Length: 451
Image 1: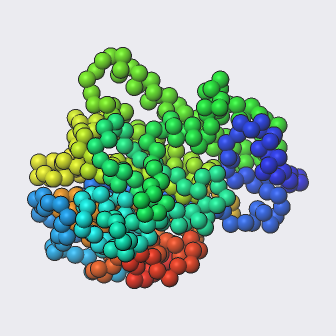
Image 2: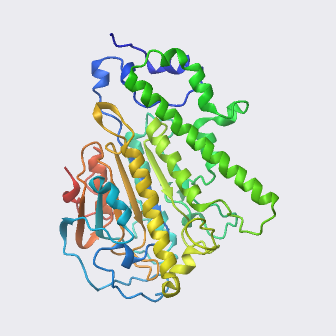
Image 3: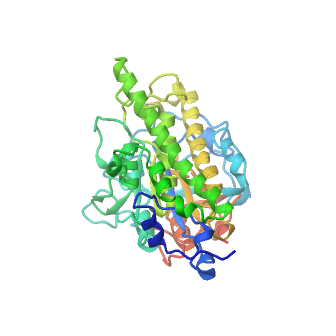
């Protein structure tokens, strides 16, 4: 049996222009050299708004006192039990328990700090400055220590051959714009120039996969598969399986979006008095995550950011399937004594949603026997170490994926006091092959997670 040599341009032309970008298929490697090329490296972020509940997340803090609301612009530091600096075995607190299923693929990084630059609300700098490339107080004439963010700096190196250099998503389905852009966007081209997040999953899908141009064919995958029949016959057994799995993933996303659209119509017709954001919260977050992962898998982008929700938005949200009634996540963090159970449930759900995507990525095969997860750095994190005290130190952070074989996993690395968050971003830059001596206020890399 001989290897079929078909260029990517010829492949796309043969599918009639209706095909999505395809996963790696060994049957259509141009030659042995092409087949041995390294898969693309990717970077993605899963951002948690309003901090987390520390006693459920961090090892050693299970009996931590429930703090009282500490006010805005606070530099409060918890001085209770601490984990000694260094590398430790992973332990699974109630919030982190879902990570057990993927323990060999993740590392917990704790002890990382940020510096709050006074002049704005503490939440305003959480997401907007989380990935910033500039040290505090270095941007003159701006209350925000904000310059080109990490995702765009990385995309300058690994995102120049994809249709979209970056993808920005936010699971904020509120209609009332009560906060500024600094509360709902973590991606910035530069100081004052936001890369606006997309919130509507249907619009995200239309933008990425062009379904608006195929209104007569609601199921774009059927159109693409129909045009690709002549090629499918020439695929190997393994490639045919991957081909079918890939397009089935696209169908699943379309089906889920149709289900959500149908549910919204039914709720409107029934005239049920619910907040405008009546979209099922867990389904919404899962769908947006699937869209980001599919975009990474298909080569539409190599860099993606996803905010699970906006910072500080006080509007009550329906957390269907998670909480019993609408709550304001931000408001609950200001009175944790009254809402501890709800806060812990939300934190655990967010970690579970992250794990779901990690598992999905670990099953997507790529070249050279690797997976999408092997070739990605996928970070879960928050811009606050605690939503009640508004502390900017000891931030929650989980790293999944191998970064193309450059990262170690399966450990808990606790950094010494005062280690900047920027050290992690510098470490990730190095893991992706991007040579930088410093990043923002970094003081070095986190060597414990580098191969």
